[in-house]
Image 1 (cartoon, rainbow, N blue to C red):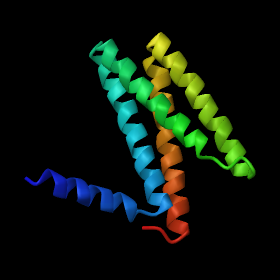
Image 2 (image 1 turned 135 degrees about the horizontal axis):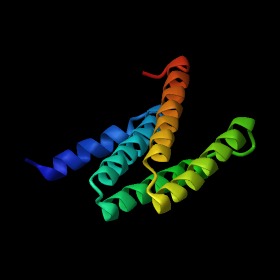
Image 3 (image 1 turned 90 degrees about the vertical axis):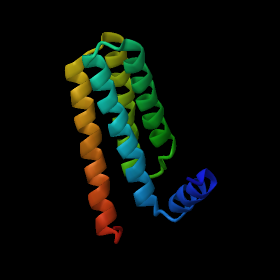
Image 4 (image 1 turned 120 degrees about the vertical axis):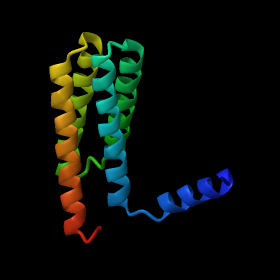
Length: 124
């Protein structure tokens, strides 16, 4: 397999995505990392659980940093992302499976909301 060709294809795919598609891709990664954290917590693989939780925090912080706080929706999302970061920090420390499931559900609901909004704006 030609690795350079694959990397070029992957980069081209990302470069041609709409903002909505990129946002959904970031949320897909967040949900994936939260699912991995759940799995690692179940297996009691705490280093991997913490790594997945840390990556989830990085993703939410990235989403938060991309907000335009000049708009009400940006400020509302900032509060939601801030809450998720706070909760993820508590989840990491307390290894709380119930709270992790709740945060994952929130992330999935946010993703679905953005998917619907993108669809209404003419996205795929």
